[in-house]
Amino acid sequence: MNRLKTVICGVEFKNPVIAASGSYGFGREYNEFYPISEIGGISCKGTTLEPRDGNAPPRVAETPCGMLNAVGLQNPGVRHFVEKEVPWIKEQGTVCIANIAGNAVEDYAEAAAVVNDSAVDMVELNVSCPNVKHGGMQFGTTCAALSEVVCAVRKNLAKPLIVKLSPNVTDITELARAAADSGADALSLINTLLGMRIDIRTRRPVLRNNMGGFSGNAVFPVAVRMVWQVKNAVNIPVIGMGGITDYKQAVEMMMAGADAIQVGTANFTDPFAMPKIINGLQRYCEDNGIGNIGEIVGTVRAW
Ligand SMILES: Cc1cc2nc3c(=O)[nH]c(=O)nc-3n(C[C@H](O)[C@H](O)[C@H](O)COP(=O)(O)O)c2cc1C
Image 1 (cartoon, rainbow, N blue to C red):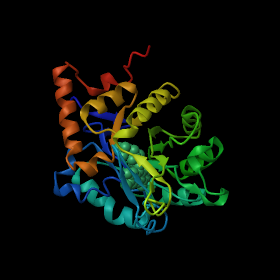
Image 2 (image 1 turned 30 degrees about the vertical axis):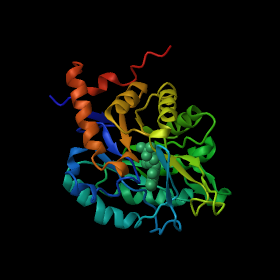
Image 3 (image 1 turned 90 degrees about the horizontal axis):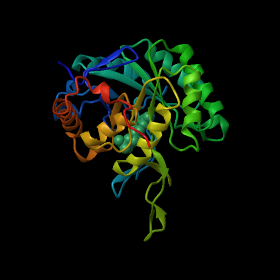
Image 4 (image 1 turned 135 degrees about the horizontal axis):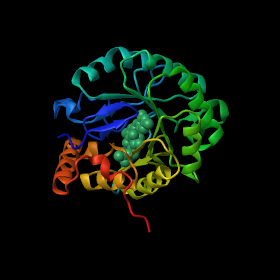
């Protein structure tokens, strides 16, 4: 019996543990530690219509129980991704999720058309990017901008579409509903929280970009809260992430309402974090008489 088998939007995962975009590249480096076929799937590093070098360094910094990053979407471009990376990931035997980013609606839509003609199983839309045609405001922070980009991508994409929500908003449920109403098949959350640190010796921000995305174990309670709110606001699958480091946090995130989970920053401190979480979930199911892990999804008994 496969107690961890999970199906989302018709796509079968051998377990609900997926690598979060930007923490796992295209899986090649981790495949030297363990066969990446062991994990449920990979949300690949964010890809854009054209190749990008990313931001100037320093681009990452450690914080207590987490990190800040402003990598700036360094990637080889969507055509390289579908020609060179996707076939290799599919050969390994795990679910391949393309993570698409852009700075204009047209760029997202065109990148979606390219991945639509590839072997990727699903597409995840990173809407935490600045919209350069509208003053640099993140797409994912207003319902109007979010709907516009989701609708444009939906037109070019027949594959299942996951919209990855930004936590940098006042009411995440409004954005969740806007994404679902615009054609999202599933939602994932949370992307990084906007943060900043300063070196008191130089009085310079620790990141060259001044601000960066905050992630890791410290953000976990925020992520659980938002997943719980979103699960109660929409009727489509929800993929939860943000600070998950061990199997107990994976269980907690699923009880909050996540149909599957993603692991990001934890991979940097322990390259075996994901296999350990998968083993932990397997044992948890066996010890608690759970036939399939899906039985725990959304079972938190809120007061
Ligand atoms: C170094 C780094 C790069 C990231 N790059 C992307 C990206 O390209 N696309 C994306 O949607 N999210 C990206 N993220 C966000 C993660 O996928 C995830 O949403 C976030 O880090 C919260 O999960 P975690 O606390 O488990 O890392 C990145 C995160 C980090 C730390």
